Image 1: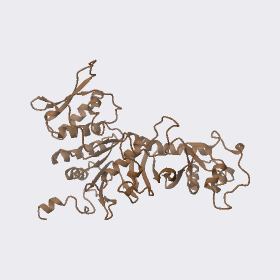
Image 2: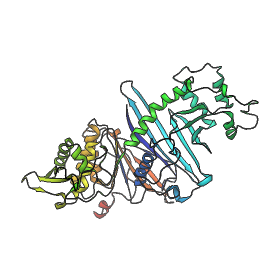
Image 3: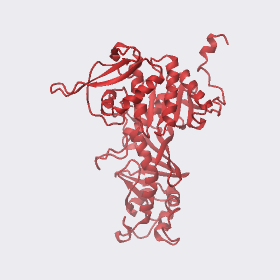
Image 4: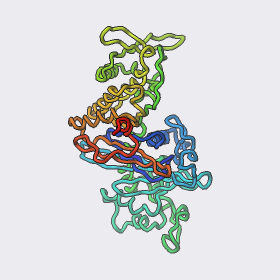
Length: 474
């Protein structure tokens, strides 16, 4: 099953104080003035990635967003919520579209995590939207489980019964769920509620979610004998089947997301080999050399892009073998295509150290979202334009790679538009977003539509790409 992240939803996250949906496509370009909020979109995805369940067991708290971790450091909820007002409800969501070519199935699932308040006043929730049906789950006040809110029960039943003949219309369980007479679906163990915990919660928990007086009351408590078990409850199996369609690709895409930051590390003459996870070069390109050593077939593909970008060198990765005292040493060689002279990256312009991690990550990625900040750093305009050819080639080459690119480069964008005109990439696979600031300082986005001729259907917002015209007196 293939899946792509097709949208990001933010509300009261950093400068996005209003509910905002950021659509995404195989190539999504983010433009905007400095501090407008472009990087917040990438940081939101990194926050979700590091907040996924670790799989270490029940000791993990399944409810909290991890604001400080290996992927991104946002400090805390207090630091990340808009205007630092902890009374606001902060929500971060992702939309994933999954397809199955064998069964011709296609569906979209949105999952949003929300947090509000601190300490004993903190409330935490999850909203899931599947096939237009919205399910709201609320963290149990004392136990590590999620409760489906009463108002979401009709949508829940519609989703899990539409493809399964689970109950007769006279089923007591169905009637109880629809009428909230003693039961609520409860979930545990995941930051997304995939599994039912004992299927249903007894009426002792119902009192916390009681309906208005006279509705949903039972004169007798429900006994353990009447509680359905997991084994004989088809509702559980239907829900888990539905979740497997949507949540597995959602978690897969978030877990495999890779990020290349705005500043890649300066080149070294030598580096020690350190085993990698095989999926990413690291935010600063710190794992690139070890990764190329592990997967030498990538070197030829990187060199093909260096040639495409008209760079005069190709690369070699050399190992000094195993040295007991210092470990295995590696170094990168740049070989001049015309003269054969070998140089260290430390001896040439810094542009190589900035672009090589990007090239390596691009040829490595398989069914991954690659988030890149300022790919054009230290590259002259012609090379920036050729980066556009790299992104188009990888998106259309069958690797199912997706790029989210925060950039200021006009040359990069113009080359991608040219590829649309040449018919090498369809316009529906390119998204251009301009992030602007409202008068109150909050971030807003402009979705700049493109036609099949590679032309924008609306003018660019003020203050971007206008400088050239102003300097020319136009």
